[in-house]
Image 1: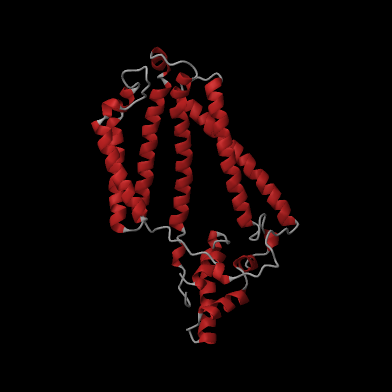
Image 2: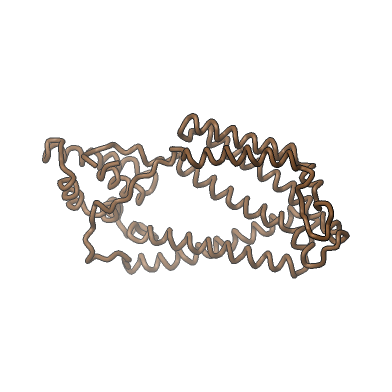
Length: 325
């Protein structure tokens, strides 16, 4: 990917999606005309670097397309804004998870209606996220109002520092092959040792809660086979397409269903664990662990689905290729 492509991509990613395609097309045309007129279509890398410096940094070019007064958080502050929002959401997620686990272990808890607990927990999580997000927006809106800029104006911008453009549709062969291999191994172990999978303690002869695995064995096998099949198709095609992305979403939803079944069964297993000789808070912790895993997987599923939709709708590799790398 050459410098001009990388430059245009960095400008485009700092603009709203509705404006991005037109601006990228305009910049491609301007660069192509300039290169043809000035270098007869055959510039060296040093000439491309000099040309990009004339245009200015991607942040400056992106900001020039819309007046900064129209932004709540403008192009100069937006990259920093995204980093701060991501860090706040991550810290808040970890903090709430730890707090809820401690509360679930040592506080009064009803595990009879696990769906109600999940909805309550997810609702509280998103309420906290919205509150934190609003606080960050207010802070950056104030910074924008007073035109605070985090960039060091004394440091000269260098086009050679432009990052490469990532093609989100390309499938990683190593990751895909590993997924197939581990899927096959897990499928074999699951079926050969299905009667030995459960909770094992030194004072328990047989694995506890093995019936949960047995009851869901058919669903586990089907989910693993679907995952292996999808990885085989991806390895063959080499790229993600709309159909395979949708298939991945469906398979992830299927895994959510399986985890939900496990969570329901674990929530009703406290008496079994107590009868087996386990003492508190271990039975409560084990009976609620599926509930917390389900919340984590569900949040991860929503985040990944949003990310995949964004990548599918805006693959950055469509930029015209100009100049030499």
